[in-house]
Image (cartoon, rainbow, N blue to C red; front, side, top):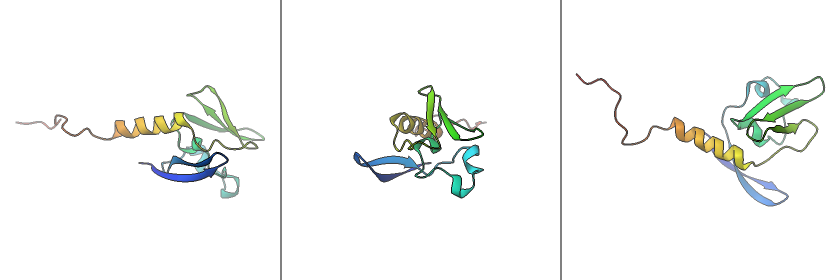
Length: 105
């Protein structure tokens, strides 16, 4: 489950999700090559990270474009990412009052 953090942006403080598992490509990066500040894409279910001979890049399946390249400023807050994280967490949370799937008898 993710948590929230407030970050300073050129547009003022903003809140974003953090703390979820990151993508397998990112966890293999040496610490000095890890994107900083961490982009919103690092926890996004729609992100697909890949490495070229020169760059680390992220493809956003939600918006159908390259959302990040290692020499560009990172996406710090993304409404699509926040929505997808929330939807994923809601799907993982058992609904209260739902019928039991336990065999009776």
